[in-house]
Length: 139
Image (cartoon, rainbow, N blue to C red; front, side):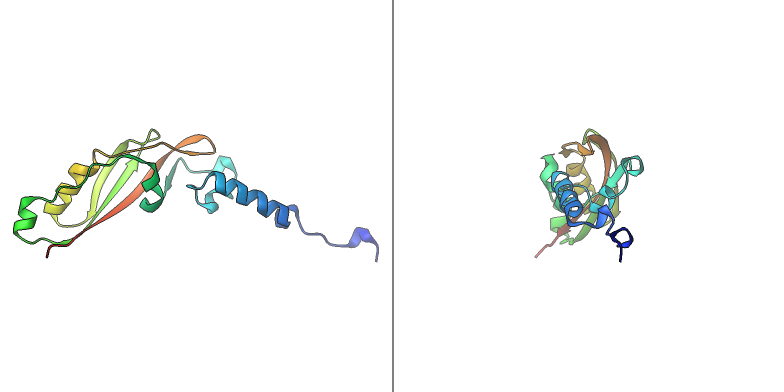
């Protein structure tokens, strides 16, 4: 069988290419691999990351102060806040997705003061979508 008819794996399937992608993913550890696999022209202007990832980008974190009413009434529960960060890491939009109004107000008072380091995708700044859960337990 002539060597010209032998099938070879495309370059993107060769182990060397996978190693190169791993290197890119390590350099851009905040960016999900499914985004990095797209051409830069198709990368989003806003990406969503988990708060566990964004914790390392948190520059200013004001603690949540539990309201006296919540303590007095033994209000417990979960509050989920959704944030949109601008390209500078500042909060552009914020809203409560779930939670008791008394606890939600306290969470929003604190979270609105948080600041994050900017996030970039291939050196281009991007906006961020975040959902942040808080759990309050009164005993």
